[in-house]
Length: 146
Image (cartoon, rainbow, N blue to C red; front, side, top):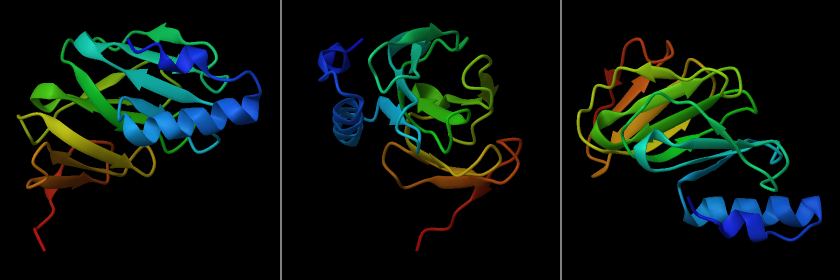
């Protein structure tokens, strides 16, 4: 896992700014709106969570084996994560439990944007196939290309 975040400056505001910058260039870093809580994802289902703006990280159990590539955190408790081979994960309790969501896309997922625990949209790596859910991933609807 990338060690860049552990070298952040000590002041918490500086850490928050550095964490946001890192997240803007590396989709494996996912920052919640409060900028205090963040997740980072990686190979073989690895997920870590920080509650102190990236100063320390704790490993969470995802039960996924695919490489994870990005995510979206609409709050400090809710985080959607995507990865290779159509992998989608969701936590609604800060990562104590991760639920594997059935994906409508079997290929590598490139992006996810969640607005809450029920609503999200995903796209494959080519961004040609997009789907949205309004029920926490129980069902997905194709978003027609514009």
